[in-house]
Image (cartoon, rainbow, N blue to C red; front, side, top):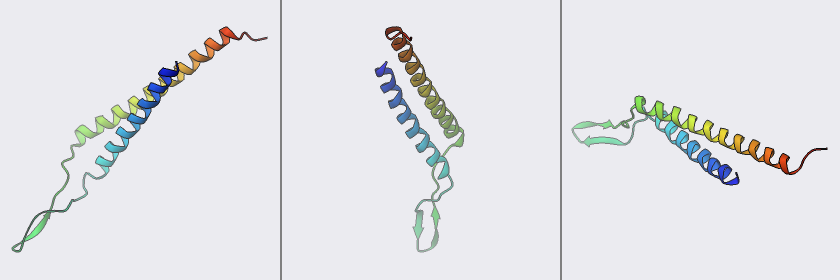
Length: 92
């Protein structure tokens, strides 16, 4: 059960990182980067990131679902561990 909790904790960290990266990508979708073209005759043209919200929003939802599922694994492992301890240590 400790292995399940360790695996789920690792999954929480991965899902949290996934959500952070996806949220940062969405937040910076309209942030111009450095000028893509600059010449003496033309004004510089700012390059915008190639962000597809139709891809990023489902990624964010999947990351959130992954986080919730890993929390459920931890909760289930803890309740199973408690039930096992109750079998070994009966109450008064």
